Image (cartoon, rainbow, N blue to C red; front, side):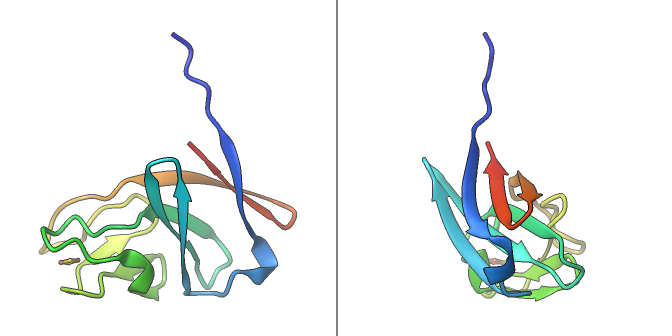
Length: 106
Ligand code: FES
């Protein structure tokens, strides 16, 4: 079976504010999109892995991490890993920036 990936245009790069979280829905995927201070754009699942499942677009961004607004878990935007002493992982999505177009590939 061949799995084809879909590239979805989700944002205009220059309109994205640094450290703001944008929610994007592609099919059943609830995604949080962030542009960090160095200009990189990341997309992760928009739910903390904690049982309370905080919404990560409402989190505080520092460097390439987001802090869950509910219990302050520190989650890497690059690989989705929750940082110690907590543990867990959120799904990450591939992002492509081409000119001013920001795409998510699923
Ligand atoms: S909901 Fe608990 S750390 Fe996010």
